Length: 327
Image 1 (cartoon, one colour):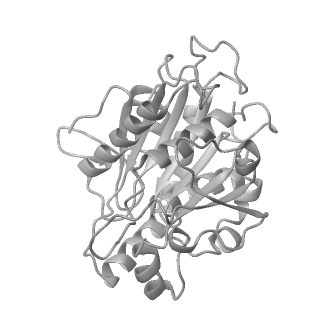
Image 2 (cartoon, one colour):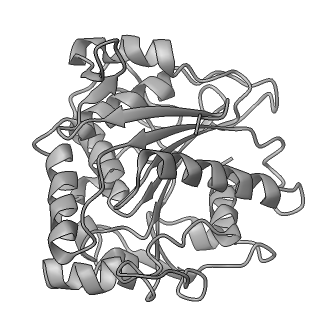
């Protein structure tokens, strides 16, 4: 399947390095060429109002990852209207899909293998720095779309991060990397202090494969990270991957099964709403928001249960609500 004009694809190798196609096959892009590569392949179009970065999760093939992004975009297009999202006039998203080797046997050993790989790619490997540099590039090159003429941030385009399963870890590591990184030449969008690589307008984490205390124990810098909007994580008790498998792999349930536990800031707990019911600003305007999707994410067979049942109209409604409220 080929990407649509509003989707670009970047691939990471097992060590987290960005890969580029060459006549002799994929090869890593040297660190000093990352910005040049982004400029050649990922220049945000002027027509886009919102830039989305999507990182997939466990047991996702390259084609399946692309299908998931296309489906999510189709769901947002079907949901969006001026009544429910009055500030999304227009809604023209442009998406960067980050793919990584996430396939394994559907067993406890396979779950542990991908858990360890995702962690190693971001910590010992290069994934956090590569994605962080990508976000910095996108932030610096946001163009001012034709309409609306005045928006809240520097260049008139909004940057949203969307993760699923283990992909949520990559995004959190990347944002945390930026929080701890030495000041770069790229500046934050207004508002915010200068000298940071980028600012993110929302971080939406579907069925995150990480312990409930991950934000208090691992992603501790997110409370001070370059996030202008909230960290929103969904969970469902029909998710066996972050319930059954995560419980056996890490001796505790995951965020995707039981929601955010402890965090460096208070956690707001809400339920996932149907598209016809708006999210009040007060429900989402918190650093951490835990969204109970147990009545929505219910479908799924096999060992993962409803772990990948996040491509729903209700999910599009949540994403569009975040985009609407951040304006």
